[in-house]
Length: 77
Length: 393
Image 1 (cartoon, one colour):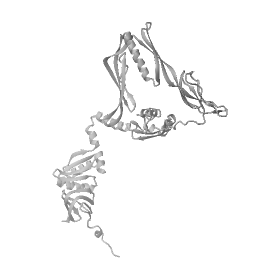
Image 2 (cartoon, chains in turn orange, cyan; image 1 turned 90 degrees about the vertical axis):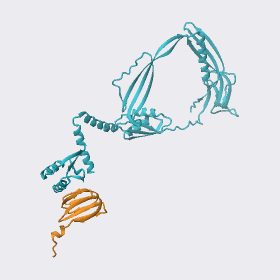
Image 3 (cartoon, chains in turn cyan, red; image 1 turned 90 degrees about the horizontal axis):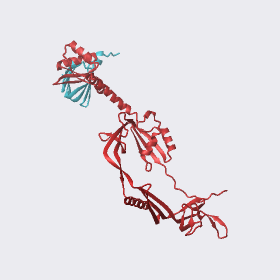
């Protein structure tokens, strides 16, 4: 029987990008920065930058965040 | 949707600095405190909170040592709070809203369509008897019963539909079309005289003429007989038809007194206005007793409109009293004679029959102090009228 480690299942964020206007991130641990053209998030041990224009947070919960606007890029720092 | 909800029920806009804002947001997310509308710009780091979540947010900010302030409030509770001392305004607003909803329960206007010969006002006046009128309480109105009762009482209307659309009662009617009078070919008629006279001309189209030119006839006398002699010496019954022209005497009398009266208007007028709202008169403070001894009266009614085009259920009826005095003056006999002749000339103009001749008798009545003109007018008139014959089986 093969065992799957718990960390393998839960590790990493789930990022869903629809076009370049809507972004959904699951597994977000917190907000590090919030500007109209740059939103910085803590995702596990990594930092995620969302770059764009007129970025707004549609909703924010403990592990989920929804961002809308003109998204230019998503990058791990 | 939630934005509208919070806009109505109240929301706060809170502000802090950018660095502290991020820290606060993370903390609020962890504590699952409701907030929305994050903005971070030159004006600072701003978030929006509901009426209930604002206090917990401020407590958390205080616990974290984050300076935070309320910069704006929106929503109905804050508007009421702003005017909390002004009870009149609040009561007036509530009363106004209540009146708007309450007035929606009444008919503001009755509109009639589909009528061509029967006047709209006649139909509206008839409908009032059945409760369909301005100011009627809509929930109490039984439209079906009103329609049936109206049709039973008003024979000139063959169909009616009353639709209540909001505060308007739209009434569509279909007028009754009467069939033409059909001559009963199986009925029998004599032609008799409608007036006394001297026969001038007989036109017997059917039946046997009983009179000829020059005969004097009296009212009701048989002129054309329905019974006709057949070729074999037997009588047969016909439907008498025809015209009989006779010289008929008409009388005309007029008396013109030498002492005349006329109205002289003083120039004083008084206008009284009655206001009706939803059909109910409001004239508690108006005294509509006539203010003058002698007066003429004019009345008018106007439906008021808001800003000149929005119909409202308010009618203003105006009654104007115009004062005059009675002025007595005397006229000469010549003037009385002239007036009598004028009246006789007008009478002759009104006559539809051909005037053959007339004779006038004028005299002055010293007892009545009046000039009297009596005229005998001979006219040529068709005196033939049909009279049914009763057949006894």
